[in-house]
Image (cartoon, rainbow, N blue to C red; front, side, top):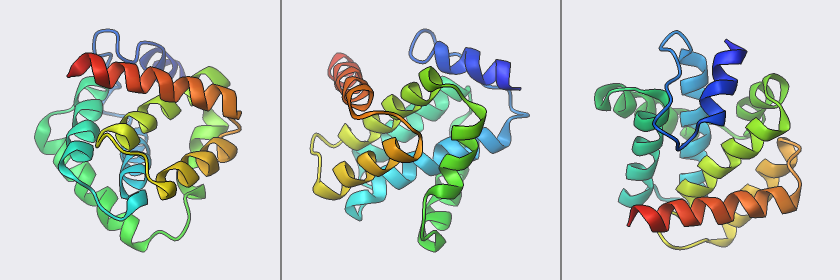
Length: 154
């Protein structure tokens, strides 16, 4: 499974690589992390929800119904979650640095989807980078790539 995750992450954005459906936990983890990022400012707006949906559909090869369920479950978990360590622990232990930076790029795409970066979102991204052992420079480069992707999609 880790080899499949590695291939999926390395091809992020290429041509919609897919993670096997047997990897439900990874889909839940990624969805949870993306929802956490979107909710950092207290609101999941339409642009952020669309961004999360597109990432999950395009990269995990999921259908809209499954994605909607993942987002709703992640929102429910968000309401009960008091920390993000549970989301980052698996990612940190089961991925290498390049993969974690790519995941940071996905999260940055959600943070930047509404065209604004709130203080709470910036704080979350610094905390997330620390929890994933991604340095500030790599996180900044991931943010730049995410911004470029979003601009090219417009």
